[in-house]
Image (tube, rainbow, N blue to C red):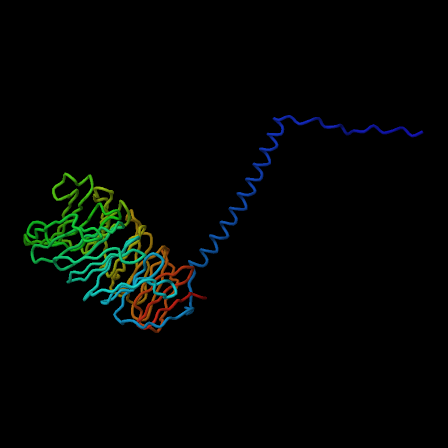
Length: 397
């Protein structure tokens, strides 16, 4: 009779709670590592695809849509929110990405000027008295000034500061969106100089102004910052900082963000830092002649005449004043702006797009007189405004 084989299998006893918890932790750790690996590779694929698309040179421009323009030929365009502001001597129109008019506001401006912030924008009649303030829903406020408007700057809250012409005693007046005077400064040209540029901080608390003084027989500029909040409450004329610069003209000043201010002179730019009391942080000398300037909340940019005067180059700096890109460009462009990581230039019928890394994405003649180029929603997509039409174009290989 055959002998039965003894089984080597033993019945497993019940697992302890400690063992169950250990196995559960091991499983969760393995699953987390697997998910992290998958996520990492997905991010790399998406980032690589995006870099391939955005850092690539394109040889063709495809016209996806065209809208014939029936309005005045003296229109000007700027990007605002998710649409386009079209303005002229007859008023303001807000358009969506399909050229549909979302709202229209009539006006009378002999020489309209505009200042755009994130949430609001203002139109004023340079040399006249009319001022209109808008948000994305339409007219927010309008008023008339008592003296002719020269320059404007608006904050996100709708607070607007205006340089008003008055011979040798100009005024810098700050209004709310309804036209109520908040602060009024009479400028003594003899002691301060004439105001040449101004910009308000996003929250409307700080106003930065440049002045040109030639009274003493020598040329000098002054940068003065006014604080209308607690920091400037007990200061004379709300002045919290001021600095003089000999033999320099400073035609441009702007806030990059809440705490960084940039002043552009004829041969340099100066970075100020400080939310409530801006103070000089760094000055960068430019060896070449400045042709045009542009900026975003992250970058400071210039089109410069090359040292040998044979052409032009576009140079980009970060907010610390460090140069991160400089590239020769073909042709001359008097219109330049930057959105995101793209520098957009145009002149006549030709436009050019360069990335912040110096890649020339496109340089094409569109066969139309270009009034403005604005990035549209989507990759490689742009609105191109011309004298007689609005085009939606794509970059293709």
